[in-house]
Image (cartoon, rainbow, N blue to C red; front, side):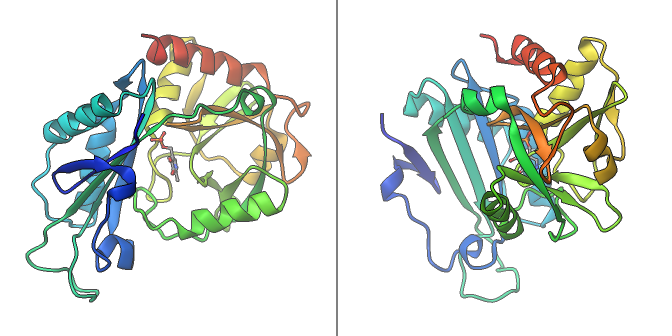
Length: 282
Ligand SMILES: Cc1ncc(COP(=O)(O)O)c(C=O)c1O
């Protein structure tokens, strides 16, 4: 099956899709994005993702005439054309192309790019055995609530984790507060209570994070937003990361210290099973 793309109104094979070299997404990272996945071929939580995309565009004052309804049709059409059993749709909106200058172009004609690839589920090895993470100072900008394509700090942190023999990194503020991982939100179980850092400009308000809070509460787990620190990570009974494509990923060590007994705990499994039951079943 072909991987497909959509660029400014036209569907085409992914390897033929191009944008202008003076596109502001390319020149400045002046762009925002979303990642939507399917379950049973249907885009999951697409309204939440598209609402977040519109919020991101608003936050960067990107002029556009896009709507949730219009984008929903586009995402569905892309999934339909690609015909993968399960798909990942990447959607990026940039502030268009213009001679390179930091000032906003006026008028602005946004670039709309979408790609569809086959969803590769997280390997069962990682889901069953969990992952090692390292902690790193959060050196990103102060508006991580905006889903900006400018992910250099995340790219470098992920690389540092890999270099260190780990699988991901969790960012910490100077006072030890946990923000999030390089591409996912963090949940920590301490004293039987499940906590995830509160929504703020320092984290992306993950769609999966919200669904997991809902999932956990449905089965009577004490789950809430709350400050989480490095100390909490080191004494946690369990830790897991959440994201659209990886769903729920148990963390079994932090900076080489085992989490609990160093094996994925029952909470991550229980929450994941319930999540699948509530959201991922046909
Ligand atoms: C930095 C960051 N935080 C959190 C998330 C999780 O968000 P969602 O659950 O909406 O995929 C992502 C997703 O890629 C991310 O890049």
